[in-house]
Image 1 (tube, rainbow, N blue to C red):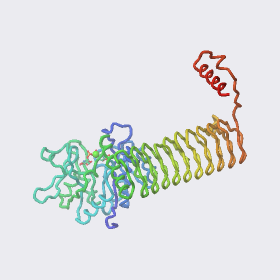
Image 2: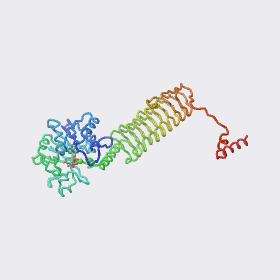
Image 3: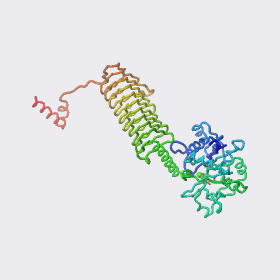
Image 4: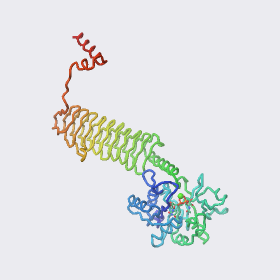
Length: 482
Ligand code: UD1
Ligand code: CA
C-alpha cells in the first residue's frame, strides 16, 4: 500500500453550486452527519497522502472554518475566481510550493459516496500500468451533464474527455463518463496544466484537457472503471443530495446488519457515519441514530425515536423517545414517549417512563421515574421510585438549582421538589407535597393543605342538580343500610 501512497491529494471545492439554490455552499450540505466535502476529505485521508489540499473559493471563510473544525490538519488553497477545474488544480499545486514528486490524486468535493477502496484501486492501476494519468470512469444510465470518455475504436485506449456542452451528438451517446477523479504523475500534470487553453463553450481551463495534451506528447493515458457507478454520483442539486443520502444510509445499515444488527425496516431508518453498534442491537422503524450514538449488545431502539450523541447500554430498551447527549445504562427502560436531554445518565435497570423529560440528571441503578414527570438538575439514588406527575422545580427565574433524592426512597405522586433540596435515604413523601425543606433519612414528609369536608354543601348550593339527586339517593341508601 505504501508504494501507492500519493504525494498529494487535491480536493476541488471552490465552486458555488448554484443549482443547490441555497445560502449554504454546496460542499457544506450534509448527508449522514458529515458535509459533502467532509466525506471526500475523510476518504482521501485514509490514503495517507504526504499533502492534502482543498481548493476553496466561493464562501471561502465558511468552508475554511468548517474544515478546520472538522479536521485538525487540512490545508486550503484559495482560488479567487472559478476559472475551471484545470485552474483549480493549478491553484492547489501552486499552494504546495514545489511540484509533488509522485502521484497526485484529484477529487471533487461534491462526490461524497466515493470510497477509499476505489481511490486505492485507482492509485494501484495507475502505478501498475505506468500511466501519466488514470481517470476513474463509470458507465451510467444517464450521462447528461457529465464529461464523456472518448476511446480509440481499435485499441480502446482513452483519447480524450469531452464535456457535455462541447460534445457532438455521437459523443453524447457515450455512457462512459468522467467521474472527476484522477491519478496523475505530479510533474507531468504541472507541465500539462500550463498548456491548457480556454477555447471551449464555458471559456474555462478544463482539467480534462490534460488527458489529450499528455496523450499527444506520447504519454500513457489510462482509465479505471468504477465497479459501482453510484459511488461517483456528483451532487449538483437537492434531488441528488437526497439520492446520495439514501445510498449512503443503505450502505451504513448494510454494514451494521452484516455485523449482527437487526434493522427491521432499513428504508425508514437514518444513521450517521459516526454511529456504532454491537451485535444483536435491534433498530425499529422510523428511527434516526445520529452523532456519536452507540447501541450496545442487544440494545433495542425505536420505533419513532431520534437519538443524538446517546449511548444505549446492553439490553436496554428505548421506545418512542427523543434523546440528546444521554447515557442509558444496561437493561434500562426508556419511554414510550420520553425526552432525555443532555447530561441525563440512567443507571443499570433504571427507568424513564411515559411522558418523562430529564435533563442533567443522574438516576441510580434500578431507580424509576415511571410517569408524567420532569427531572432537571437532579441526582436520584438507587432503587428509589418517584411518584407520577412529579416536577423537579430547578429554576427560580434566575438560576438553576440541584435536587438530591437518596436511595430506596418512595416519593408520592404529584410532588414538587423545589430546589435546592435534599431527600435523605429511605424517606417517603406524601402525594401532592411541595417539598421546600430537606427531608431527613427515613422520615415521611407531608407538605400540603389539610382536607376539609363541608357537609351538605351540594344540597344547599346546587339544589335540584344531578349531583344533589345523586347525593340524596346515596344518603337514602346509607340510611336504609344502617
Ligand atoms: C466536471 C468535469 C466532468 C465530469 C464531472 C463529474 C471538467 C471540465 N468537467 O464537470 O468531465 O464528468 O465533473 O462530476 O472537469 N471547481 C473548482 N474551481 C473551478 C471549477 C470547479 O474548485 O473553477 C470544483 C467544483 O467546486 C466541483 C468540481 O470542481 O467540486 C467540479 O466542478 P463542476 O462545475 O461541478 O464540474 P462539472 O460541470 O460537474
Ligand atoms: Ca459537478
